[in-house]
Image (tube, rainbow, N blue to C red):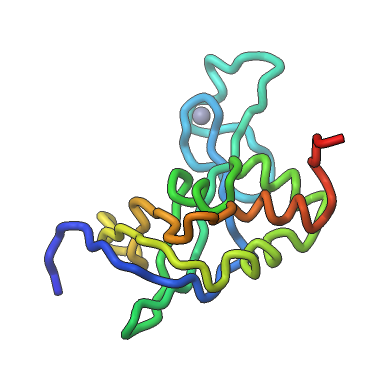
Length: 161
Ligand SMILES: [Zn+2]
């Protein structure tokens, strides 16, 4: 069980934790910022900050419960993999969820039951408790990322006349 190479599994999404799906990083140095309070970065003091741009950006950090054929467990999904599930950047999803408050919950519902091939790796940091999703591929050929379904649900973003 203590092999280090990534593990590829076929799994079904059981649930998504809607309470915290993203975190903030400094737009200059990419260091993690606290969730609350000023976004002025303590690491770089925003040296090199381009006026008019955003001083931070959001990246996904999503906890997913997934089921394989013999167990259910929690994995953590960071930005690159989470974009496959959500279909947009964390910033876009955050803005969307401000206008449509239950979006994160709805995204969980939308993705529930979807099957994926996931490559999982053990956390490099010994304190981290969850397997990390390295890559994720939807198994359904007509899989639609959560944001597409949500936009249809909420009737927004349709550019078709
Ligand atoms: Zn910084």
